[in-house]
Image 1 (cartoon, rainbow, N blue to C red):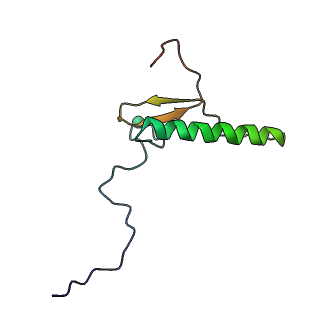
Image 2: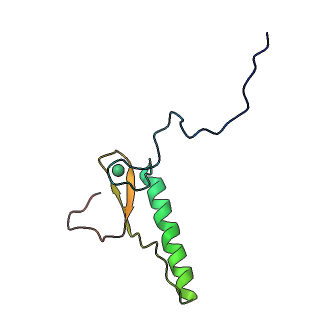
Image 3: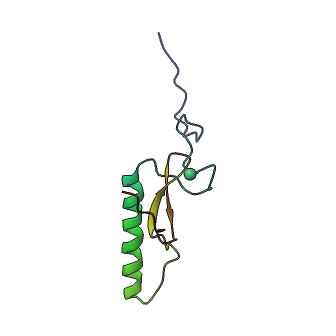
Length: 84
Ligand SMILES: [Zn+2]
């Protein structure tokens, strides 16, 4: 029995939820850890650009939980409420 597996096409219509949030339109991180890693690399990028006297538009400072059950990054400073 031969099954003709069609050539592997990388369709973006996978079962996985899209990486974009329907609420905020931002890129969605599934895990807080992922968001924090991205935050870290944004910080690293900024500090290395600062050495070159350049600035990055990637000004995210904080990760927050969204109603879409994912995590997003924001450039707004944290509010008075502490979420731990
Ligand atoms: Zn969201």
